[in-house]
Image 1: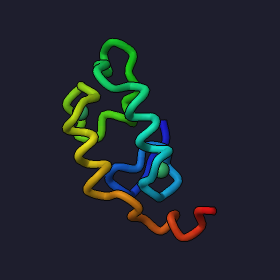
Image 2 (image 1 turned 30 degrees about the vertical axis):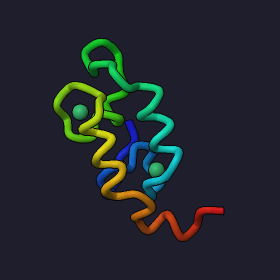
Image 3 (image 1 turned 45 degrees about the vertical axis):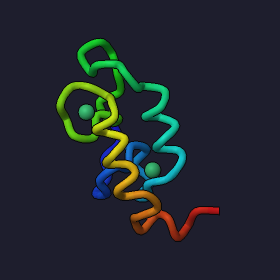
Image 4 (image 1 turned 180 degrees about the vertical axis):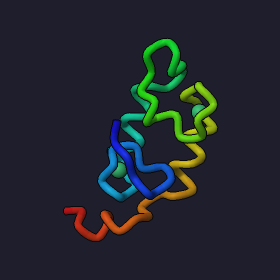
Length: 70
Ligand SMILES: [Ca+2]
Ligand SMILES: [Ca+2]
């Protein structure tokens, strides 16, 4: 499990971007209990759903790691 100080950063690269969206998209509709990636459950309610997507959008392209993006 990756850790990041940035809300919405699933991949742990200190930036919220399409990589994080792609992980969320792949896990969408799955519960953590059913094998979903707990990193993609951004609000820790056990479901990977629209509420976690909101966290990504609210923090889109935020974080110190974004400066190093290609
Ligand atoms: Ca990221
Ligand atoms: Ca959730």
